[in-house]
Image (cartoon, rainbow, N blue to C red):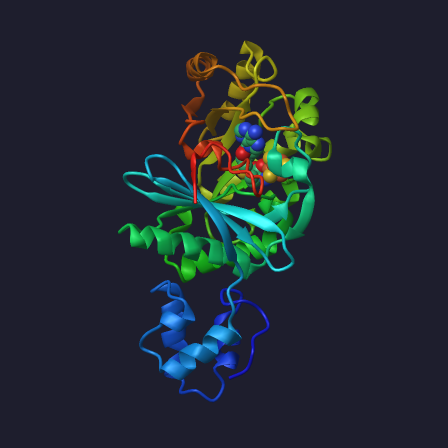
Length: 350
Ligand code: SAH
Ligand code: SF4
C-alpha cells in the first residue's frame, strides 16, 4: 500500500487504486463501497481483512477533527464544529425535517466577500476547503443521520464561505455527492453572493443543481452597501447570468433575502424585488428570513409581522416568496451565519 497524501475523501477512484497497489483488484470496489455506500470509516469496513483496514486507516486519514456540536431542543438540528489541518474551524449543520434530511456544508474557512452583516464575512478569509474536507462534512453528518434511521436527501452550500470562489473544488465535491453518495442534482443547492463568472461557469457544467443567489437588495445603491461584491458584478449582470442559467438547466433560481429593519424591508424594496423575480422565467422564488444580529452588525432583523407583510406584498405583485423560520431552535438561523466557536441560536452544547 502507498500513502495518498490527501485525506480519505480527497482520493479519487484512480488515486485509491494507486493506494491499493499490490491488493487484489476487487478491493478497490470494496473500499469505495465502504466509504461511500456504507459511510464507513476504513477501520469499520468489515468485509476487508483486519490488517488492510488498519493500514487504510493510516494511509487515508480523516480531514475533520470533531471539536464540539450543538443540538436543538427538539433534537432535529445538529451543528458540528470541526477543526481542519492547519487549525482553522468550520461548521456543518444537519437538519432532520419530516420528509427530508438536509446537510448545510461549508466551502471555505472564512470568506473574503466582506458582507458586513455576516459573521463569516466579519471573520475574513482563511483558506479554501479541499474536496475531501467538503465531502467528509456530508459523510460525517450522514453517519449521524443514519444513526437516527435517516438518509441525507439534500445538500445546501450555505455554510461558511463563498462556494463560487472555490468552484472547481465545490464542483468536484458535488459530483461525488451525485455519483457516489447517490444524491440527485435536484437536491443539491449552491448558494452564491452573486459571483457572475462562477454562475456562468456553472451554466456550462453538466449537473442541473439548484442556484440560490443571496440578493438582499434589488437596486445597486443599496446592494453595493450590503454586499460589496455588487460593485464588481452589478444587479443587471447578475440577472443576465441567472437568466442564462435558467435557460440552460431548467432549474429554479431562488433569491435569499435577509430582512433588515428599515433597510431592505420597505414597500419599495418589495416592488423592486418583485420586478426582478418576474423578469426570470420561471420566476425566481424568494426566501425571506429576518436578519440575525451578529456582533459586527448591530442593526436588527425585521419583525416577524413585517416579514409576513413583505411576503404578502411580494405575492400580490406576482412574486413567490416563503418565510423561513429563524431563531430559537430552527436551523435557518445557524445555517449561513456560522462563526466558528460561537454556536448561534442552538441551545444545548456537548
Ligand atoms: N457565501 C454564500 C454562501 C453562504 S449562504 C452566500 O452568501 O450565498 C449563507 C446565507 O445566509 C446567505 O444567503 C447569507 O447572505 C445569509 N446570511 C449571512 N449572514 C446572515 C445573518 N446575519 N442573518 C441572516 N442571514 C444571513
Ligand atoms: Fe461570504 Fe456569503 Fe457571508 Fe457574504 S454572506 S460574507 S459571501 S459567506
